[in-house]
Amino acid sequence: MSELDSALGEGDFAVFNETINVGFIRIKAMFHGIAYLDFHLLSGMADKEVQSVLSWLSEHYDIGKYYLQLLPHEQLELDCLTRLGFTEEARLRDQLFVEGTYCDLIMMGSEDKRV
Image 1 (cartoon, helix red, strand yellow):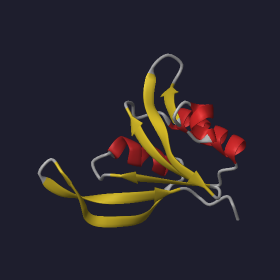
Image 2 (tube, helix red, strand yellow):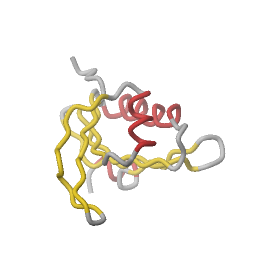
Image 3 (cartoon, one colour):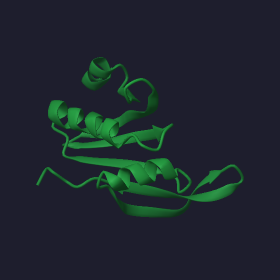
Image 4 (cartoon, rainbow, N blue to C red):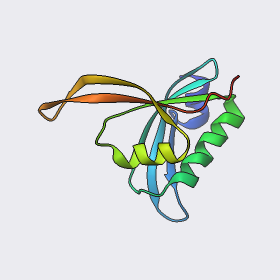
């Protein structure tokens, strides 16, 4: 178990607004100031809550860059990340076979604050 797993309980964050769970963020890997995350939303307006988790990670683990992989149909997540300043850095065409069809895999990245 890594230091992050021990500190964060397997590296998962439930994202809440005042009373309800709006999604979760899972830290998949973290090294050299870069964090690779899984991200799933249950509500479309979770920008403030997601930003709070990212800010906490930046402060406590010196993270300067975030990457997330999403499918094109994960529109809530794509819209939220775009509003938070993430951009599409890569698109792997027909990368995954999901529910009987091939889907692109989108790599979203944050601004790099390590430089």
